[in-house]
Image 1 (spheres, rainbow, N blue to C red):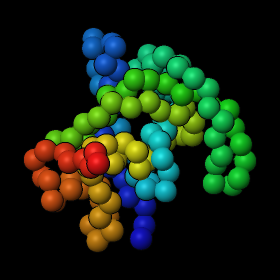
Image 2: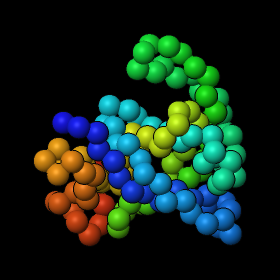
Image 3: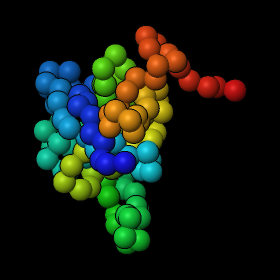
Length: 126
């Protein structure tokens, strides 16, 4: 399976006068969070809420700003989340994908809306 990207929209719900940003995000079900580069956090005027210690794939630890809230949209889905500020591209992790009820399709090499709930996102709350 190759790399899967999705076109998503990111916005600051606290600053509705700012235009949303359309970005290409690497979808990674092995990552948990939304990660954004610093220039996106600056463009959206996102507030730093916390600092988080993160462990990257090479095993090294880094202290990163955690910013938010962020409104994220993909096709007919959306959610509100926070993001870690690190890296040079947007990384769409499992938490926001689960929140929006979207899936990775290896056959299509794409992020897709869950075909079992195409019109309204579904969640399990047992």
